[in-house]
Image 1 (cartoon, rainbow, N blue to C red):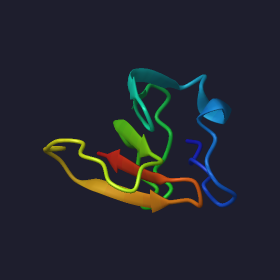
Image 2 (cartoon, rainbow, N blue to C red):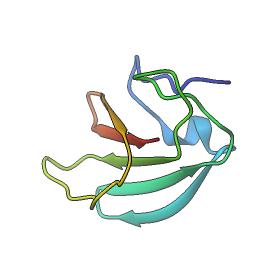
Image 3 (cartoon, rainbow, N blue to C red):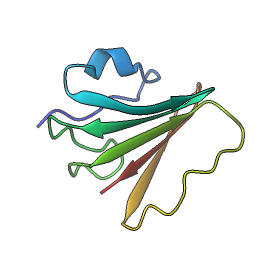
Image 4 (cartoon, rainbow, N blue to C red):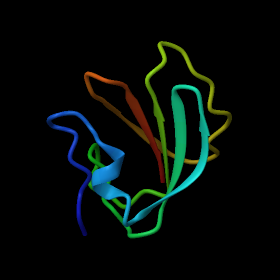
Length: 80
């Protein structure tokens, strides 16, 4: 299982073969994990990935446990 690498930032295009775009707005995107990538925070597979470059964002009730990963460019919220 490949873990998302956020050590030098995060480029969604590096993982496009296993992530499916579900929603994209100005400065945010939500993707489904179709390849079973591992979370960069806890190492477990995640279900959805929410990425935002905005200072504030609302992503609703995840209804499950989640992890956070911060890069220089934005915040990643990974739901399990």
